[in-house]
Length: 297
Image 1 (cartoon, rainbow, N blue to C red):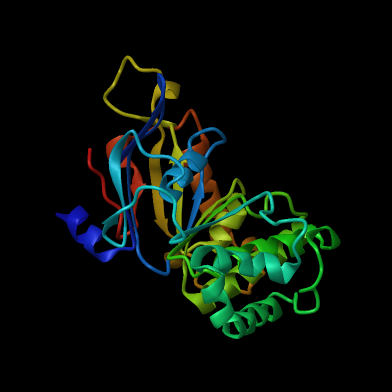
Image 2 (cartoon, one colour):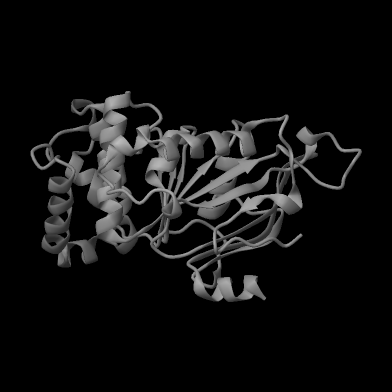
């Protein structure tokens, strides 16, 4: 009953998702429902299926079993409703910052539409460029920008077409620590203003706890009633689903929260529940505290 009500209410809904490549089960029984305007961060050990799950949500791949819904409609192949930002900058080297950002509008709606609403979009783009301190760089080419600046352009490139869900796969992974923290603050500012829905994969637990309103851990380190099956042969599942707003109530710009006791304890808990092969929670005892968590065992 809970699953049906969530499916009607939430912007993204995954039910009993399974993904198999040959004999390799990557994901199994993935159940997830995400409300509009939520900032979900996703962590988990390397190779445990986070990026595979992201590709399924984007529509770049189809699940072996199960269903995915976006706004109560069955989601199949990729479309502009689901924007994406990767670690590697998706910028065209021969286009300026401005032209890179507006390209998605031209491709999605056509050039006649672009010409009819050009000034409206240019005003919007320049507004966002100012928000991320790039207003003086709109005529530069990607090779003239730093890594952090290029990633800001990539985010605006995805944002400008107003996707219903913005998916991000390790977008700050290649940046130095100082630039990375700046980018975290830029992203939080944009999220707060645009009220978009974000699903953000990261290998950095500190980043995940700092950014998200909700944290998901995807891992194959769990136990169930299959006694004869090697734990590493099981598909990954969502083993933790935490409501971070219960723990982190500080202002979004207060980076000093990263040094608080509650912040460090939360990271310790997540590491134990999702990253330790010696700590195998039973599938019926996963830490699924978020109000929208559900299981179809």
